[in-house]
Length: 134
Image (cartoon, rainbow, N blue to C red):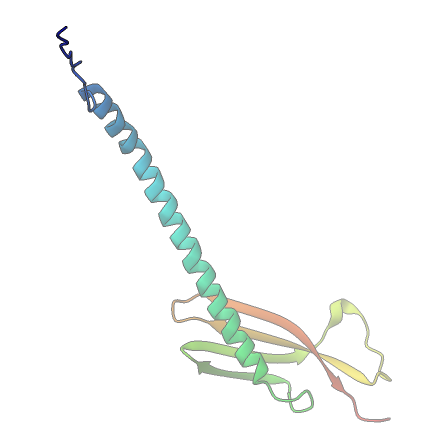
């Protein structure tokens, strides 16, 4: 008995229609992905810039004089390319009268830091100063 082998013709690959559909899908999806990546990168840059400003403000705040030596007025300077301004003002407390017998007097401390790119961070805080003994 003689056996003959029949080979079925195998079709491999894509048809032109399938290739065109895949190309159309890629044409629609890739710009959306590119826009998403661009938005993410801008967000990352913004967060990095804010983190740099916060770090600079912390360095400046750490270098402030003692409570007793922090006189009302203003100081300014530059540190690692960041311009800063410090203002020490009497605390107004939203209209609340301060007790003249209090052992501590609050002062408002404003720190403004500007990065080389122009971004600005402002920190408002209060420091207590021990008043002279009565």
